[in-house]
Amino acid sequence: MDCVSVPAVCKKWVWQTGHDPLGLRMQNGPIQPLAAGEVLVRNAAIGLNPVDWKVLGKIDSWRPGHVPGVDGAGVVVATGEGISASWLGQRVAYHQNLHRLGSFAEYTPLAVRALMRVPDALDFATAASFPCPGLTAWQAIEKVPARKGAAFLISGAGGAVGHYVAQLAAERGFSVSAICHERHWHRLNSLGVSRCVAELGTLEDRAFYAVIDSVGPDRAAQLAARLEANGHLVCIQGRVAQWPFPAFEQAVSLHEVALGALHRHGSDEAWARLIAAGERMLDALATGGMEPETQVQRDFSELPEFLDALRHRGFSGKPLVLLPSS
Image 1 (cartoon, rainbow, N blue to C red):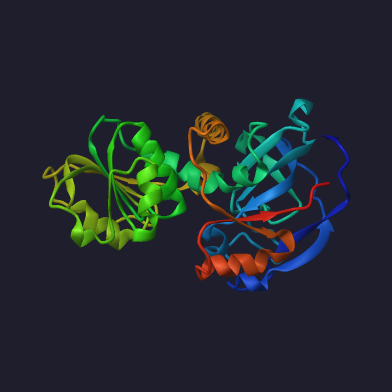
Image 2: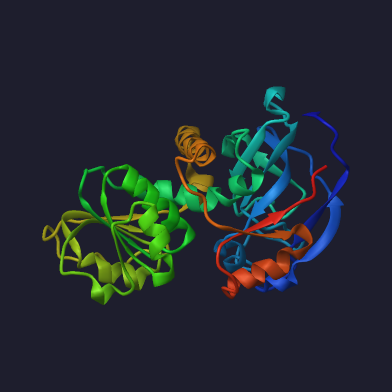
């Protein structure tokens, strides 16, 4: 293993039992040896996502002492067998496999194929805010063939994924509408959304070429009726239980999106495409070509309480946990 200075133990927030974020416990524990194809990242910032509290106590592979967390950014400080030492010192962001040791720690071991290089001009907090929502947004819009000027609807557009879907859809030339709370309208308009409504019932009677839904399967099923012939319905938070139309009627396409699927079933080629897209978006965030979310930052010592506040929607903005520099 090639490495710079790495301690024998590090601080980590671990899951023991139950579903409550406040049940996470701080431990000083050993840093596990790297497997072939892995690197060790010293985390500078951790991005919190709804999935981080939703999965607590629900992953069969977890055992007491497991480190949760999917998003982080920092510096590569060690490389395992088969990994070039040129990775040492690289600034990276990542989305971690839910079945592996996660980002809620000072150090996280990762498969090298999951690393996105972070531009020097981009701070670690913004980089850590990106992976889960940004990569999910890219996966979602990749399901929809580009058609300039086509009517495109984002349901649940006020959330983190919607924030990036709106920008990607506008960039691809779609005519973008959004369903979300009124407090998000000004921001979404500035990102390229031409029309915002608060409720599904207030939408004009029109057909959409594509709908991306991040609310849930019941909302997605309702929105299927708003698709034009050969349209596309993309489900992020659960898919519709049954095909919405008889065979060969409207002939719509149904899609589902899940980053976890790539962790468990993705080829190296599929990962290379995802990482290339992620790095392009990180470059755009660094140069002003894309807008990041508004950040709310807390110290590493406050992580369980911050995650619990996210669970109860106790604030507005993207939650970021910062670690002391070393």
